[in-house]
Length: 291
Image (cartoon, rainbow, N blue to C red; front, side, top):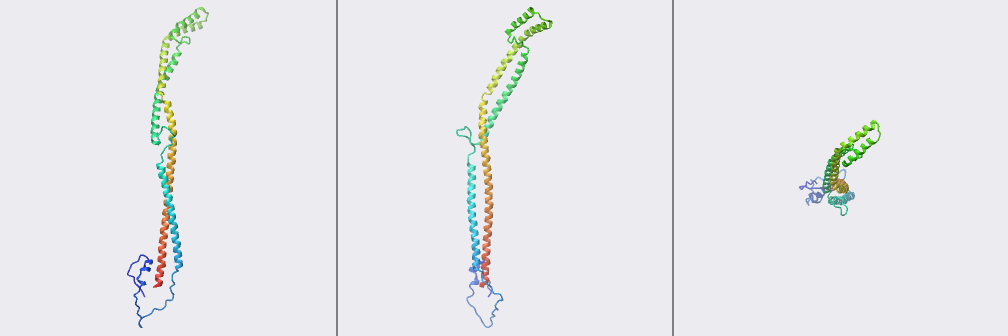
């Protein structure tokens, strides 16, 4: 007897449980005119219930295993995420105990820049003074050639002239030597002007050297602070780079975990679909058989 269902079912399992075909009319009338259909050539066999439940159990075990795998991946993801957050919250910098520097690398960079500007300013000022000192030394060297070695002071000029004059008058010389002595007397007399200029240059040199020294008073301290701060900043940069690499590595690991989680969810969805299809196949066969 054919049955036409009036309801719509979401699955064969629902149709098997709630279908009208199971109820029938409750009355069967057979008359002489009733045609009894012939026995089908090929009898239907009932679906294998044991095989159905065995496969269903296998699918559910796989789903359960994937569920546990997803829980493990979630725990791994949460652990990596916490590790990343801890790395972001960790203080930057590796200042030693009691070191007068900030743990903020950006502030240390700023301080280092200020110190280097101060150092450059000192170097520039020293170079300007050094250029003047170089000119004065050149003038000094030129003047020294115009001053007799025995009359380095202006008050020594008369004595040097007398000694040379005495040598000229009391000793016998050839004409060349006499010309040399006369030239020396003339040279000594003319050197008075150069001696005075030499002394002015010498005093100017002393003042300039003192000025250069004064300009560089703070230089040793600045250089020392630059050296110490540079070492600390190098350590901080290394730590910052390592932390960034660690965060990048964690990000990649998180991405990989998420990829594995997605594949696991896809596999689980496929298994659920397979489970529903397997149940529909079984209950569809069961409905066909029992009808």
